[in-house]
Image (cartoon, rainbow, N blue to C red; front, side):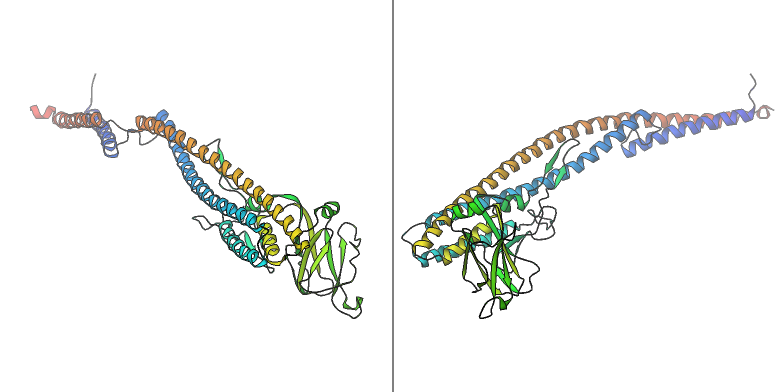
Length: 412
């Protein structure tokens, strides 16, 4: 077979380039520590490596979610533990207030401590996490959920949303609980009501929380609502502020209370409940007592404080106080049960996070091992191969030089 000089040159160059490419590839593997740097190196392994890298990246995000969920739940657990302590202290104070030997002044001292506990509880209800979000506000984490209104009572301004985080491909966990479920929608010991004023009022009236003074009478009226409407001053003689009490369902007058002269701060007794209105009303202004089967903890404490400060030592007031204290104890028990139930759920969620975290760590360890086997280079083997390829390249270069010097003219 005849080999031309051009063929000899081309063959030699091609061989050197091939050996140079192999050497460069091995050198890159040694310097990077990776066996597969491009899909062309090993298409099957490259596909598996990409899948493993994506899985590990996703698990890192799940790990971050688990850390965030655990921190938030542990904060909630700590807050609820403090809330429980305050509830227990309130039960002690209610029992103490029922001591028949106490005077009005003694009960007022108890009311002062209850007020201080209420403020402390509201601070706990408005707890914020490390991101500055209120943990009991539902989805409205940017705003404080419990806000004091014009009457000095507290309104819940959050919602009943519950945030959920994914901690694995198939597992989610709630990272908190709504203050509405925990502290507002508490089953009342007996039918109760929520006193409020109409937001469209043009005057400046406020209403106290009130309380049930005759459970049988209110049970007969329940679940209807009460509306107290202020009339034109000319409706009475001499003219002056006056009101009429009606049923919300059909507008019928309740207990004959029509055109009653308004006396700011005076007790209004109707359908087995008692409340009082303060301020300067305008005709058309309204106050409401909406029936409810639930009673928030702040309303329970507002009623307790009002009763301890205002109910005297006469027979009627003592009977009302007895109803109030009994209902308060039952409502506190229900509030405590609500907190205990959520604490149990938090414990279960933390267990889920712990178990998921342990499983995820095991899977990540296995995946990293498989990824290393597919992707990482055996340095000892690669260094040996690099030395061999270097020797082969040098031999190819030397042989190319030698062959290129062979010529018929060299023999003349």
